[in-house]
Length: 306
View 1 (cartoon, rainbow, N blue to C red):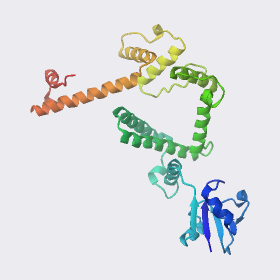
View 2 (cartoon, rainbow, N blue to C red):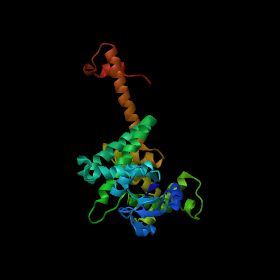
View 3 (cartoon, helix red, strand yellow):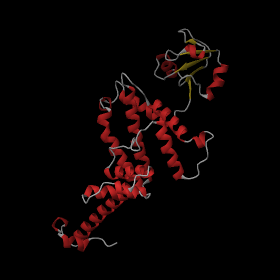
View 4 (cartoon, one colour):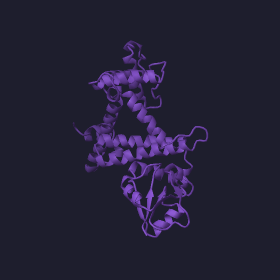
């Protein structure tokens, strides 16, 4: 007797299982599969001979019993991305992780911010191993929020909905790639077309609609400077005065208009300053001086030279 179990996702068979299915004496559906979708019968208790069982999960009782008795198992390879979503579902489900089960969009916000900044650090440090790990941590946040959203009682959506919306957006924002629109040959032209498409797509009433006001202040000022520049807002309408905030806004906004990322530049400079502080402290210790006792001249003495 030859018995095989074919694990399916939705209504698709793994390609390498078709030969086994065609040569079987009978093909049945397990209890966790819609038999009518495949035009077959549910597996009877008396099933004998050479047959194939179409199942949705190894955990289904009849399926599990057949696998335990040595039935051949055929299934399509699960992509790591799909497996990550399944792991998230398991963690969030009854019997999963108690901590994961009680999280909300609000409670997860801090982790999304933290993981994003850790990813930025990996990018700026050029650390490929850390980059790979931190991209995974950011992906976890996306999977986590999508799973929480899927449990909403009135307006649920899941990771597949998120992915579908993303595909629609990417295709719609690139008509020169996926349709017959005029070709775009420069990144600058592409950015301009993106803004035009987003303005029409989202029916924005203001040039500052869609700007994330919760982003870091320097990045926010830079983004506002860029958006207003595209619309022709002159520099003399920027906040004026000698207050630090006004000066910072003007510097950041003008830098972004000039094509510089003020947030990234400031982060890089701040990180270098932190390295210089550490270097001065190390030099002081090497000279037998405790860094906490340093005054202005002491810091100048041990400060690293460019």
